[in-house]
Length: 186
Image (cartoon, rainbow, N blue to C red; front, side, top):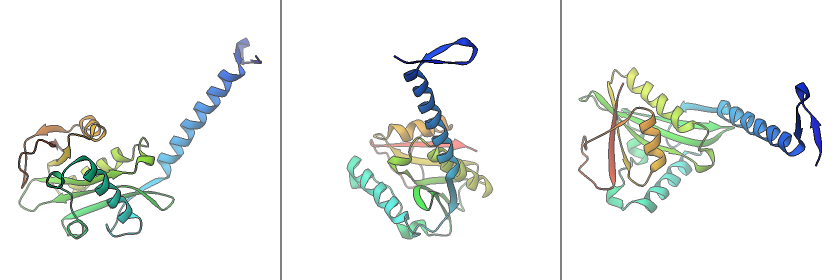
């Protein structure tokens, strides 16, 4: 075993020091990755976004039957009452989300929240959610609502940690044992 001298006369083994260097390196990499991700308003048909939406569609189709998937298609995402955001790093689309506002309502709905598995843990989902809430606030809306599925504990955890609480079905939704409806006052 190799012993290395450490500050103040303390000694550490090489493997302990290596672990500290590796941990610091990982923290620095995560910090750089978070900083390198940009979020902007984009057309849902922009390069790389189709792959995001297809990955989301495939994931949801594996979890829920068609009648329990309430995703907006490309045409619906391009409507004027929709703000579609994309998170990118080095040009690669890593996540997306949309906020849909309704003239006759005081609330907006979150749709198409998705972060590719390789980018999870970078805080991108939380950043997208915060940006979408800011869009809703900017439109004078007082509440954001969403529908998500029971088989998505990570999404549920994110929404709950950001202040969303369960509510009943809203808008055109009907009760669905595979859906969880949530809302947050802004």
